[in-house]
Image (tube, rainbow, N blue to C red; front, side, top):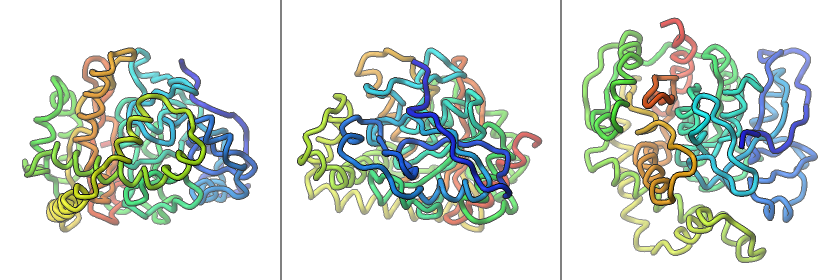
Length: 384
């Protein structure tokens, strides 16, 4: 355990630019010209040719002067939240070495947290940037759906897929973000809802661990008012997102699976089969829940306000737990993180606090399209 790269190499960035002098890594879902995008699965790598061009997000960072230093481990075909890969191994969580790093952007988060690069690209469909950012004590953003170009990024469920990124420092995070979203940081959000149900759902000690960070956020954006984030229940939102995402993931990967009969770990095979077995009758009710979630978040973020909640309900689970305990950890993460894929709102993870001696992040949901305000918040977080 520990290696976070599947391949180390260098691609020089432009001689000048806003990111000159910075290094970055890319999750092995992003194309790099001349290299195979392995997607965390050897049979995917063996059945696909090398990319001919860079993914759009990779190209943006290179053109801005950053230097690419390698490709990082991902959960197989991005189907995971804990960062455990049966083929490539489990990257180190340097903030909690006996715990999972979080997935599926595990290698990118690990590389940044270890100081092996300044920033790293990840993807977030159901929580794959937010979870490792929380577990590894990093800045991370799931941007507004469609805000960062995903051309050349391996899809999972395109209706929820986003390209995101990590950094250890808020100023670096904001510089990288300005290039990826094409907009400089603006004023931070004004107005705050505190998701009472999400804080209540969190495990023992998490709300207390995040209290100082929440107070710091209130000092920046204004006093918070307690609100229910998900009146039907966080678990109901989680089930709807899981239904829609799983069915869409099978549409993405099913033809390849049926044609090549690839090897998978049990957990990934189980997830794919769940998508294949989703009854069509379950999709319309799940879409109605999605409409409801979008309306709720639009209401709570009107006027440029934001919402605070734990980025994950618990710190990272310890490695080597029984399958039933790991499944419960995933289900709890999904209940908190489902809102990202359901609504398309941007969600920033800020380094928050520690529970059980391990990091847990504070998540801030912004209005759709208000990514620049979240960059501004990250930029000043360390000095607030």
